[in-house]
Amino acid sequence: MKKLILLILFIGFSVSFFTTNSYGQEINKKEIKVTIDSISKQLIEGYIYEDKGKEIATSLKKLYKKGIFDTVQSKKSFSKALTKTLFDLSNDRHLYVRFTEGEAPGANRRRVVRMVPGGTTPEGQTPNAERRVVRRTPQQRGVPNVNNYGFDHVEILPNNIGYLKFSMFSSEPEAIKKADAAMAFLSDVDALIIDLRGNFGGSPEMVLHLSSYLFNAPTHLSTSYRRGWDAPQERWTLENISGKTLVDIPVYILTSKRTFSAAESFTFGLNNNNRVTIVGENTGGGGHFGGMVPVGESLQMFLPQGRVWNPSTGKGFQSTGIEPHHKVPAEEALEKALDLINNN
Image (cartoon, rainbow, N blue to C red; front, side, top):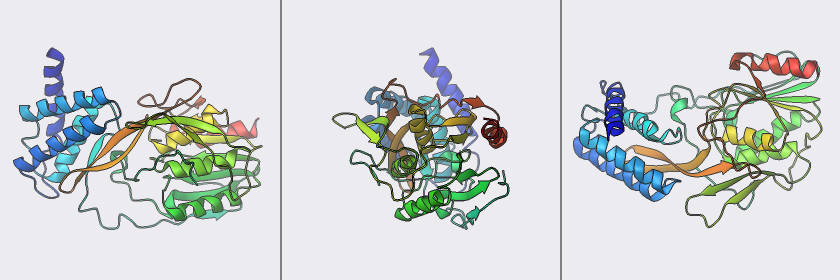
């Protein structure tokens, strides 16, 4: 009981930071109650861990009755307050609420991907693979939507070192063509650096597709389970890939604390098979997957419904993240990887 009271006081204080300004659509008390009821129902019926979902829902309703959302003035401020509250109750960064109207103008402006033959850098699906809608996470707020389906920079550095930087694992069909073009450009490098320091996640299909370029045979990357499935399902690389595979070269992945979700899953699967050297910071710990569900007018919640783990150890990366082999500040990761390659 004392723990709950302390939690209510802490969350109530934190929520106040998100409710003092009114922006976005206004919201009334009836809409707040309907949203709380909807979130609670979704958690009870769909959250990956049934008991934990009930626990979060019960605590959320208690906090609502205590009045922690009474000062909310808009749907957007309400979504921020809910996200903060749900994280405090669950420690699950995949559990968040977003306001779906009034996106900032120009949010979809495109950047230019570069393929440079030298110089320096500025800094298919298996039958059992699950699908989910790609959405911007709370960590992406304030960051423009990526273009070129996430592929930001492809380059061949001195000493024939390939460098690939991308910001999301897109689920769009055209993204596969972008991925194939990037890997074709890098097909004859002697080492490959994949920069995921600003990658927030995305599609499991793209994870499997890109992973398949780095093995010479179908490889078991990880195992997953979604609430409601009869049994866990395995994630394997694709049997066939359209381009040349890069199986005999060292691969380095650059990470930061912002490396999240599908970016972690990609890193995790390669690391499970000793196919990669990770350089940088511990990743964000988004080991759950799921999808967006409506919880009110102009409000959606990302509902975590499944998890991923290493079939050999039974361990995943939810909350803990993935620890790099060479831990350095994110801004020093590229320099460190180049040093490791050039002095190997």
